[in-house]
Image (cartoon, rainbow, N blue to C red):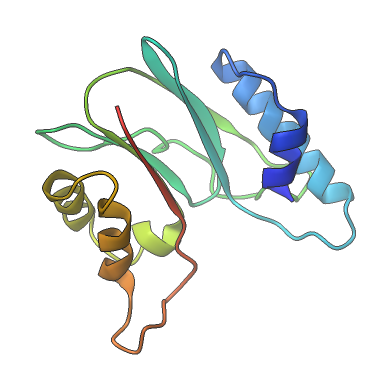
Length: 156
């Protein structure tokens, strides 16, 4: 429902305040729905000179430069209350645009493998192959997963 709301109601987001407002609107819409539950949400916008966005929950947005340490753009986010509670508190982020890879991922990836392994996959594999390699990092030998795993990877 959050994704569909975003598709139907968003316009190009130009700043952090607009990103936070969109998450507030999604929170309110989901809270009014008697069937929908609560969720985490992270959104990122890449502009000509910066990466900006907002997030709530335990998903994350990481900037992984070609060398050096990753930058957790969502390090200050509020975990709870989640989107759909009617009282979510989105936290904005902004960072200068630089070369690297932008990762948006659920906690099913971020919580069940190390940051070092994720960074290694991003740097070792082409952007179009890295997502499947990251998913393999958290897959049990049975083929099952400890949690849902969703990710978006964008080369900058």
